[in-house]
Image (tube, rainbow, N blue to C red; front, top):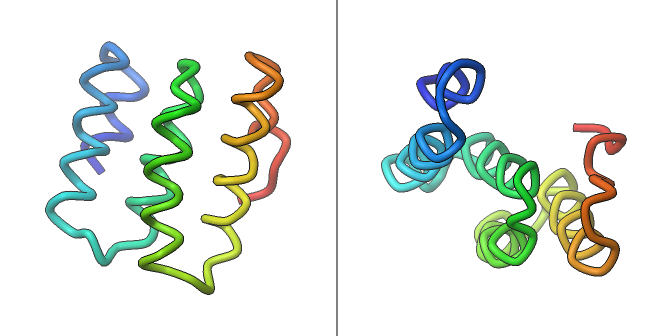
Length: 90
């Protein structure tokens, strides 16, 4: 995916915009939502990650991995840059 390529070699904002665009083009793709949510906290965007995860959880109510990312983002908002999601399983 283009977003993953940007993430590895381009500035953060390019990667973030590509993840966001992927979600806009294919909102029913759970993996794209997951990747987007996972990217946001990497640069301390915990509040945005929580908002995006909450919307994704409504669209995919049975998704454990989206719920996990939501909980990690909420934890990040409380604890700061400890990056709790890095040890979480995908």
